[in-house]
Image (cartoon, rainbow, N blue to C red):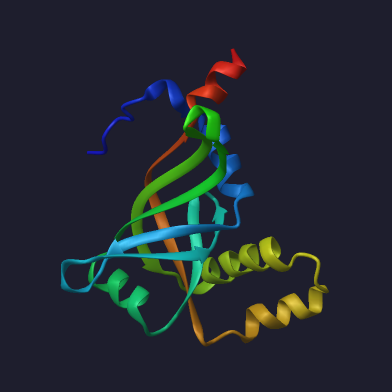
Length: 161
């Protein structure tokens, strides 16, 4: 169903892929947009229990696109170092494919807690709890990951050898 990576020597391990997802703070969600145009939007997220979670307004382009067709892709760039003299970049990135859905109940609260911890973990517990329980203006969206791969520049691969 999903293509194998053409340059499989550049494939990073499952553990390293998860580490990239946990380390990065923003990514790009791509979905089917209106009028046959793709729609890609940068957003903050958390990778939690092998799923990607993010918040969304209850109305707008993103939620409309996800509601019409839940198939999405999500990408993050962990590193992108320009190496001018080699006419290239040394990079590390991840791309995931899955289906997006609106969370509910305990999953929604747990995912919201994970988001709050990632981005505001240094705030007092009371303030974090108030933020989580008081938010009724947004959805927490889950992407149930069906396929995920990480890739890095061949120069990183060769340096490890």
